[in-house]
Image 1 (cartoon, rainbow, N blue to C red):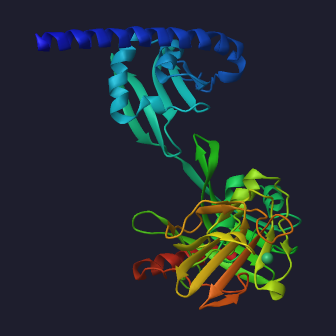
Image 2 (spheres, rainbow, N blue to C red; image 1 turned 120 degrees about the horizontal axis):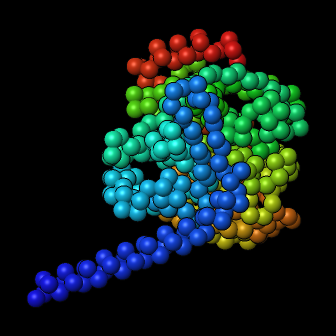
Image 3 (spheres, helix red, strand yellow; image 1 turned 60 degrees about the vertical axis):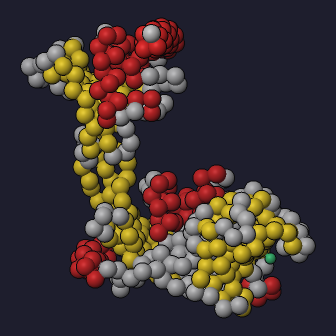
Length: 408
Ligand SMILES: [Zn+2]
């Protein structure tokens, strides 16, 4: 009896799920149909490149709208019966959680002589979901996207703004940030750039079926800041991780980043041309003051342990972090603190926000660096380099340097 009841219960549950699903699909259909017909011009692009072939192959692209489900798309755009769609759910779920489809992503549907042949959906920037029909069966696969890679060399001068200069020479936002990231241990992009600074880089452009599909890796870079020249080269380790080294094999990564205000965070969030000048010099008060709006994110410059996070009458909300090897950094006048004493932090993690608490005349970050107990200038102090390159990768580095150095 108990067993029967549970079956009954499950039947009821199953039925209500089916009823709910059907009404959901009907609801979605009712939203999508007027939308797609209204935007038909925009969301559907038909290509007739393959007309010369015996079969008439057409490709339709559909941009996923808010509230869409892959199943609704399958029923409406592809015309698969509800029963078949239900069977497909299981198969798709084996390789990809279909509830994870993203609004704004594109589904490409290929038809042969007007009949569904296959559908592709980019799961992420590296993999795609392919649903094809072979005979009467649907085949669901998760595959690596195949890109054609071409290398580009770009160089520029930093004019009034590094970001603007990057855009002017044709770099994407992503590649500008990438360049700022690989040199973040040597150059303070928020406040130390000078007119006449130069950059050059070699990077990958990716193409998919002949069309530009974004940038790939930054392969090599050169940055000249205030007359100092820095080089970096990408070497992939055995696990395929990206690591950057100079030509001597020293890691570009150091114990501490050059600045606690990340160019990436301010450039994407605020006015891109905005300058972050340094108020006052190190000489005056043994710290660097970064002028920035209240709320500007503050990052820790290195891995470490929070040794103080609390109130000081002078420094207001004040955080002090110990990084090992004799280095301690401190951040003052914060409007917000996201860490507490004793917590461990990772290089580049968010610890607080710029403010004007304590004895301060306006919003700014007062940043201090201690080396073996004495205050030192964070902008001129070289902190210990990260791990040198593995012996086994040295020949790779030599080859990479000889390939790219002349292009930089
Ligand atoms: Zn100060």
